[in-house]
Length: 233
Image 1 (cartoon, rainbow, N blue to C red):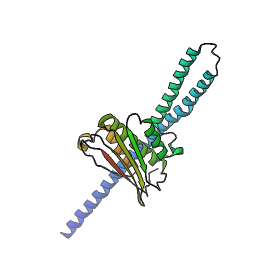
Image 2 (cartoon, one colour; image 1 turned 90 degrees about the vertical axis):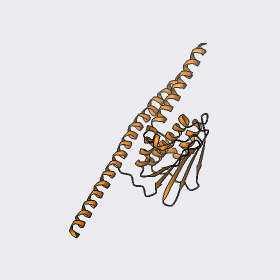
Image 3 (tube, one colour; image 1 turned 135 degrees about the horizontal axis):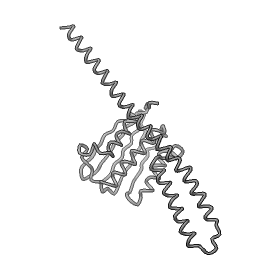
Image 4 (spheres, rainbow, N blue to C red; image 1 turned 180 degrees about the horizontal axis):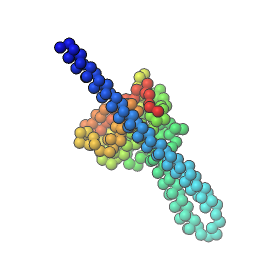
């Protein structure tokens, strides 16, 4: 009996090790997939932002200095189209990858997002004192999560208010995103692309998360990122 019990325990232990290895493999697979997507997004965004955007700006400057000799209406129309193209290039670049996030930081980038969406929804950002800049990959993923959450809220929840809260604790960083909309039943929508995208990004930064939704009242996402977060290369 003792030998049988030892044999069973060994089998269970081997199965647990195998399961942990499979979980780690899947986790790394998700991380590598997201990293590859971000690199490609970054490449295209930088190309649009630096090359196409700069060329449009140069053309705009040249156009502005042309002597049209009375063709002011033509000049005005062309200049208007050029300005629209510059704005469009900036918007596409921004949506593909937050090109300037590394230089300005997550907080300022969120504030820019809030300003851009102010005509659609009222967003409040509260950053607790002592909040520190994070690894660029973590900040990009946090920004993406906030962006995805906000997009879903505007599209589906009929919310008028959205709150974002960031705070550093001794052993972790906590991000809370909440709205005053209709909320949703997690079990019914968990397979949707919006939720999948958010949760994949949460996993990619080794974070834990919890949905605290109340139907007809709110949706809320709590994310906890460990300070000793070690991302895979």
